[in-house]
Length: 233
Image 1 (cartoon, rainbow, N blue to C red):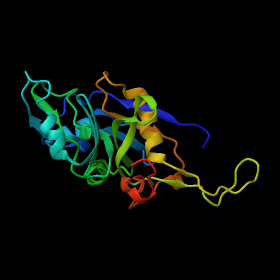
Image 2 (image 1 turned 120 degrees about the vertical axis):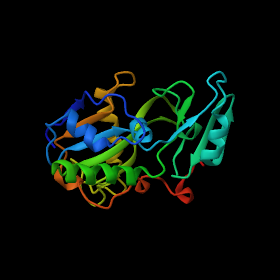
Image 3 (image 1 turned 135 degrees about the horizontal axis):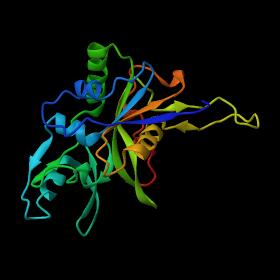
Image 4 (image 1 turned 30 degrees about the vertical axis):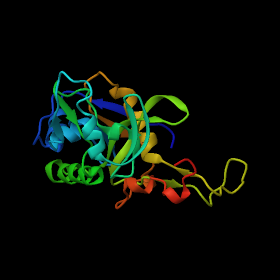
């Protein structure tokens, strides 16, 4: 890989339940090329799939029962913050439930199956515009032991979740024994640099990724560490 381009797609506008994201993307940008990877924020996927729930707009804690509902396990509580594990296997704050960039009095839940969501957009872009691209659904997560948030992948289609470098050699010729790169997380974080948290840009093109990273059948679950191998859970 010599260089990458990260290009925001503007002009999509407000996404509403029932909208076809592939159509919105094609209508907003005709410069997408075969071999591109599109990163789509979870929020617009959840909106299009009507994963919106009414809450009491006058009660700042009215979404907390939803956190319990969307969690399979509560790991930690501190004040109003809950760290929980979702049915997807993600460990995150408040089961990924978000109140930002939605109408007052609503909360956005994570998509039921973000890999399926990504495959749906990928397939419709192929049918609608004959585009062969990869899709990543991204969301903003915090990280243990580090301040600040970053975007990670919660769904993917057409691109490997993990790039396995085991068996290759480093710059000094030493064989790599354990190195696996969470490629979709790195791509999601890179795309967020042009989307921002308040810019209203929900889709970005990442262009120039190695062709060997693109492969069918990969799912984000490949990144989720098995509890038996998790020293911190």
